[in-house]
Length: 316
Image 1: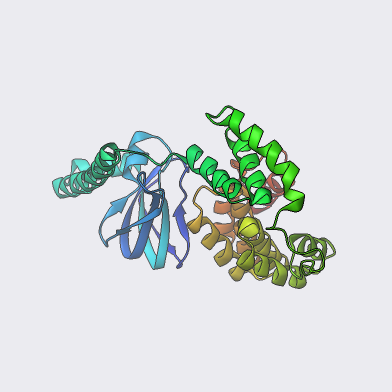
Image 2: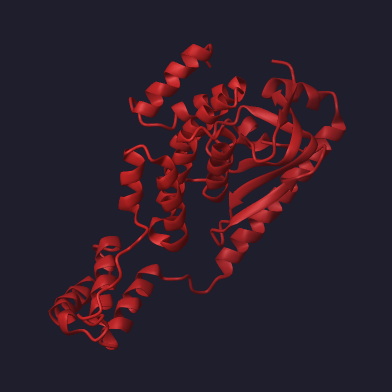
């Protein structure tokens, strides 16, 4: 396949982390960000591709999955090369080789710096001891309800941990004392009934009231960190059900930008693909539905639906 120019709208995805590297890309105009997790801090990092620079080279030449997500920041044009075509370009243009070596050296320097920093840390954060210490804090301050909760979480995450025996003893004691715990609210002052709950949103969604469900899912995502990821995702499904294609595309794209390793990535790509059908962009719909098929569970409704749509659109 000869090189071709591809236009991308802002917030589009050129490729996701984990996609098989098959092509090399050169940014002709616009702006692209390569998003990846910092190996030192675990935070998301952003490397911006400059006009004339190429990206996706390591994965394409190594024949392994991309280790970053390429996000289009503004309307952009990207030249896509197959590996064979790019090798031909390299063989006839020494300037391209020098530019590629410069890109690789910058990436290797960044990785070396992060690894060296990790190796120089004298004492790594001990998550197991940290969780145990949380339980200890509440236990020593006679907050038995909170202590029991923290210690029970410890057993979930570290069933064979260093402090298991002590944790079990303290759970037994805390459980016996939590009914008289002064951290409990007074019996005469019951907590107010929750106005915004996941259960209420799901009930509305299942009844077909997608607008009502959307409002509650959004509110839950704002006020309840424990259910934030689930609520945000379900809000996107409601937006799709309301036939708001562009809004659904932006919503799910934002979710994947913030969580490149999202556990429901396959579903997100499925809804993005279906949303492009709403917007009559069948080429992009086909692209996203092809991507989602390999990530969804075999035989699940979304995978079967994606396969049916791809057949109707003319295959992959």
